[in-house]
Length: 97
Image 1 (cartoon, rainbow, N blue to C red):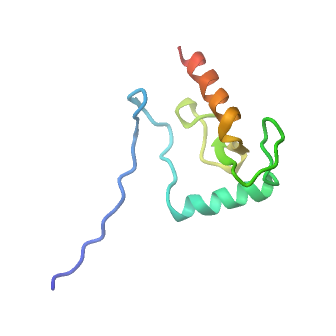
Image 2: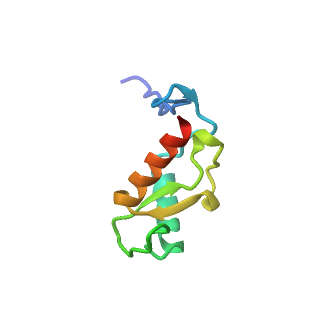
C-alpha cells in the first residue's frame, strides 16, 4: 500500500456571508476546544451580556474578525446563543448596512 498523504484542512479566507476578505484566519478543531474551555472557566460559565449562568453558552468574538477583531482571549466572551448572540449579530448587521 502506498504512502498516505497528509490532508490539510482548508481555512476560509473569504467571509462567505459578504464575500469580503477575512482579517484573521479562524481557529478550528482541538485548539478551538481548548480556547472555549479556557474562556468558559475565565467567565465562570456566565453570559457576559445578560449575566445568565449556564453550560450552554458559546464563545463569541467581542469585535468580529471581519471588522478587525483579533483571535485573542481578550476579544472573546461567553455569551448566550439566544437571545444575546442573535441580538448582537442583528446589531452588527445593521451597522454594516
